[in-house]
Length: 413
Ligand code: HGY
Ligand code: MN
Ligand code: MN
Image 1 (cartoon, protein in one colour):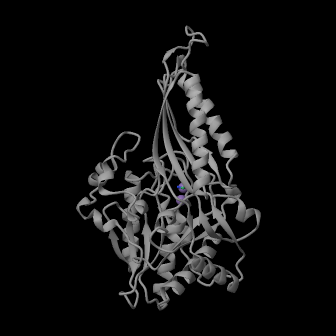
Image 2 (cartoon, rainbow, N blue to C red; image 1 turned 135 degrees about the vertical axis):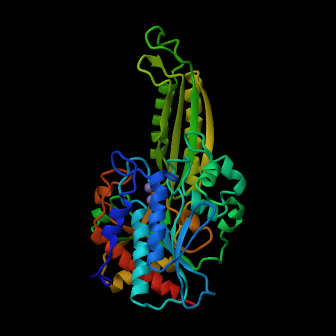
Image 3 (cartoon, rainbow, N blue to C red; image 1 turned 45 degrees about the vertical axis):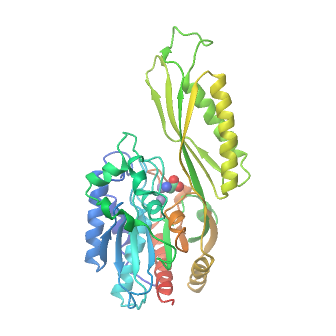
């Protein structure tokens, strides 16, 4: 039962989806022309619906709806608009649009709220560009200092610092990006589930109890580039064969993880010279291990790296491992999850408690504010793919829940 009708969910999501690189699905990388245009469109839209718009030094964009008691700490919502390569149109954007619709509904219906309600678009949540995710929320949490901006680089070796300066962000006020415990009263993020549990259990809403966290590594293997025909199998130092065996070791270690949420993925591979009749001399590849249990995650990585080292030695290739991030899982705030629980009960919305295998900006926002997350179903559990789909009616139910939760939280003293 939809309390707040006339939602503009579909039109906004489809409008934001027009800002993308030509190709299969939706690609909108951080600081790309398309993403900067999408930011401009949303900032204008925020102004038009009466929000106070600000942008911090690392590009976190914020639209705030002033409350009646501005001296109180604000309530936050929001998500991201950058995407992976060849994504769908809902990952991140669903949460941004739900947040924008929630504040529009609250304002247009003149619903009282004491605390400011702020809708955030966090910079570069996906790890596609910088091989680690949540850049904007990570900086807010103090895990990305001003000095580190020059060493965070994209695949072309361009630093985050240069990209920020080139796109007109002012780093002299970088200190103001940092948030401290007590700065934010509560933060609730709506996101697509990116797993099949809600659909399988025929639930409209997922109330997230905990968010898994990633460790991202970049592994470089160097063997010997040589002739595909003239080099006997015994003589070879084939970097790609070593990489392949190491990937299978990753899969084996992830499957043996002690927690049901352990995952291991090698999603990015770069061969040199990448030619049909040349034995690859060098491979650069990403390793992404996740878990909801920090100790279990690190144990899996330790075992994996031990096996990878043995494989590299046996195959006479060198291996260099660069850790990009080793993030901590986040428990959602029990009070916020119980508020979400009660609102679902009261409005006869079917729900279940769940764990997020994907990470989100709430992973870092949760280090300085109590966080809650609302999931809406992903068709066949697919995401990070053009086949990603969530029914707009499900996002409307989630937006109604988010709106009520924001109203309730913003009136708490
Ligand atoms: O990779 C993730 O879990 C998220 O989609 N960035
Ligand atoms: Mn994603
Ligand atoms: Mn996301």
